[in-house]
Amino acid sequence: MNTIRTLFFAGAFFVSLVANSQNILDFYLILPDSVMGLSQEERNKIVEVSKDNKSSADASEDIDRYHLLYSFDLVDVKNGFLHIIGAMEGHIEMCYWNLQNGRKLVAIYQEGCGPECYVERFDFYEYDGREFKTLFAESIIPDIYDDFFSYDKTMAQADMEAMEISANLLFALPRKGKNILAKWGNTESATAYEKFARGNRMMLIWKDGIFEKSEIYWE
Image (cartoon, rainbow, N blue to C red; front, side, top):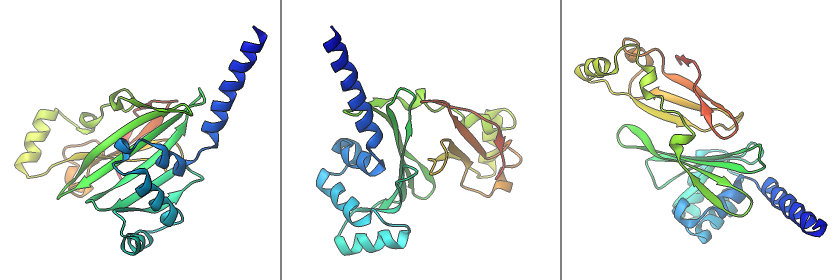
């Protein structure tokens, strides 16, 4: 019995050690091909040539030189953050958080544009050191779009439509800290929304695997 218990805890420790030793580039490489939309070979090449990039100019140079579809324009291994541009109207962000249970929560956010920007994908995965488990975004990120209106949503949207004003909801994954920034509006200047909204920004606060609402403010 003691031997079995020892082996169990040794195995658990090994999984925790492996998970904690991996960085954002490792997660980018080991995610399933179906998640990233790129083969392992393609991702290996992207990491090889662009892991030290710090700007869109760096990324564009790699894309042209090595005939890539995508490249990192920002890699922050220390803070667990990637920003990807390339053959798309928009960008991809990727980051991860450490969970109290020793696992990782990995997020992939893709923003498309054409002509207005929109959320193309916002996916979450839990990683236990061996495999990724898909999570429902609705159970992690609260529904906050309606919270921004300063009066009845139906009336406000009708008033905005009459003035040919639209508003969408975009996000920014954290490069520093743990909170996600929610950005409301985005198609007009902030002043254009003042009649209809209580603000255009909300920080979603990290609570070990889920995010909670906070105060709405203007930026």
